[in-house]
Amino acid sequence: MLGDKLLYQASQLSHAQRFAKARQAEGVPCHVVPDETPKRPRKVRINSLTGKPYRKVTSEKAGR
Image 1: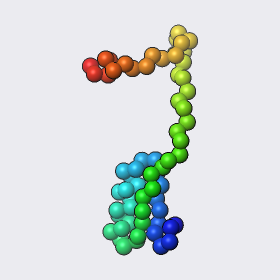
Image 2 (image 1 turned 90 degrees about the vertical axis):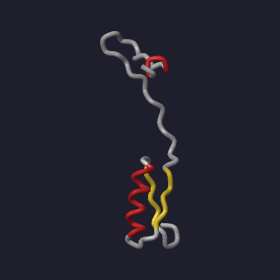
Image 3 (image 1 turned 90 degrees about the horizontal axis):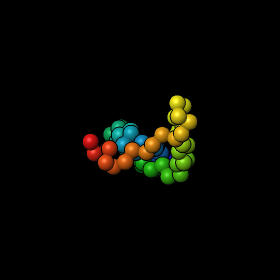
Image 4 (image 1 turned 120 degrees about the horizontal axis):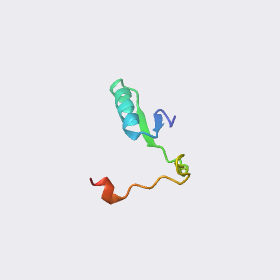
């Protein structure tokens, strides 16, 4: 809580904003704060058949 306002923090910002809007419609003062927690680096996934990492999708393949 910040003063008389409720604070909402969420990794999915649109969900928090929708929830805050609903609270504001009920007359509850609230404010949305984006989640600024640093994300953990992704682990490399290993293909169980080959024992090698999966290939990254290139922009060429993504465009198809």
